[in-house]
Length: 329
Image 1 (tube, rainbow, N blue to C red):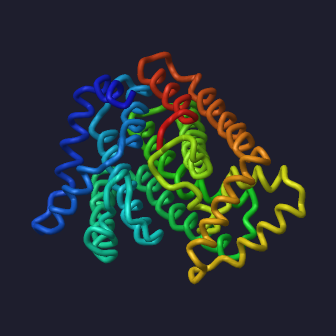
Image 2: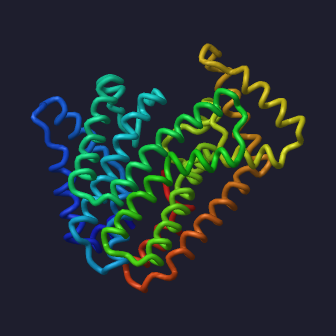
């Protein structure tokens, strides 16, 4: 599907890739080497695809302002991944070694800072004040989401409302910033702006919910280890389903055991807790609970853009939303 959308975007996608590559040029040889490695192992580039589709859905064509929004979105997203890998001590991402493990944590932070600086250069130097506002608010949300998640993990007292705030800040906020910026740059009406804002919010929420479902779904064979979230004491949607459906004694006993797990705990004990969490979520229909919420977000996203004119771009936006529940990690 991703390749099909890139072919539909045609010259817009070529122009995006050209602008994106040029934005990363540096006179520092090591930085260029690491940038090339990151680009080689880049993901599907979903955010710029959605940004460019938004511009097409609003005006039928994309101008240079929309292209800049797409480039800024991908630069910001990659910067957060480079920083997250250090925060999470991640040895691999997308089946390849992270910059942190291949070079050093310092290198990963510094390269992430460079990508962030390139994004800010595009936003501040080439975008209007409203777009600057959308992205600056997103940057604040990204930090706030990480801090809230850290706070709740240390206390192990997250509520589902806390979870919704965290996933909006950490994930949906960048979907929203990039797509709303594209709509504004394409001269969207107030009604169109509201539609894109709602779509991007619900799509971003659905995207993160599916990621959290993956962590409790060994049968989906995503190529990544499962059960990592609970070891980091991140309470996500499938686990909230377990907490809601299980007898209080069972949930309370498990939470007590989870609180006792720390950095110095034996690896065997950590893996035992992880396996038990996956089993409990399955037994008490935590995944069903999460999938129900996921479908609600998808339906809200699709409904939101029903007011946009019928076009291939709008149709692809609908397809991306429907794809959230079946996508691979």
